[in-house]
Image (cartoon, rainbow, N blue to C red; front, side):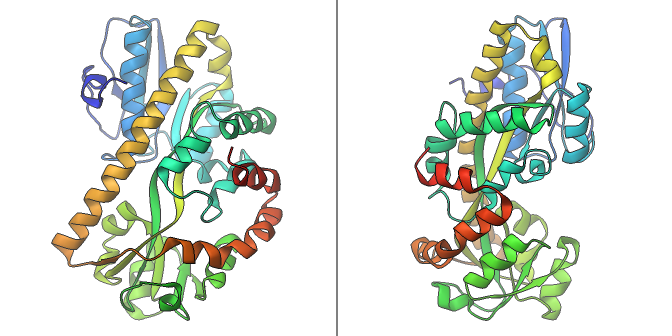
Length: 332
């Protein structure tokens, strides 16, 4: 695979508006949406695709990247993709669950042992990826799945003290979003879930309404939650599963050779995104420890996984993803 530096050789600058890989005059220009600002694996993947598609098409296909939700939030963008007015998306699977319900399976805890395990079992060329590609088609979402990946982890943090084992979080008032899945998951781990909006979370922990929370590491750092919950436990209870998808309208306009090119480039981009997700998490954990005084622990993940395993079938049934859970358990 080409290095990220080579992939970015087509001059790219991230802004709140369009980002363009500059090559020869293109016959086709596509619009690609991401929800996030850089640095972020989603934008790394988008940049790789823009540069590689431009190069491999001989400049005939250009991709303009619109980061930071400049085209709207994911549900609205997915609606536009069904019309063919937005061509590509790189984003989280949970934001697409409303359009492709089977993706809810990736919100279940401890399905994978880490990013490498996800990529081996659900990444390019796997049975799991093929299954979800069919689910995209059946959903009527107007999207064709190009590739799946995992590009980070979600972890536990608290104001109470360092966490080494499940017993250390017993009885803590645990912030969860308004999700029955999240409530049942954290009840199984012995916490007392309380529903708090993300925008109100800092104040809720500061005032004791909540004592603990779970989040991505970039989210924990970016919202300065380490100031009120300075104990970070790397529980890695779920991965930041993401998808690269293309509008079916756009897909059907491509030749078979172009379709194969897009799938090949997307597969390479997901591998890059997985590597960058690991790198960003590692770098941010070091920053939290060294610059912000956060106490970081690495509890036995197997103990946490064992605590929630008895409810996975129940949760999968409630979400209608029993087939997906069975497939993932089978190894993909």
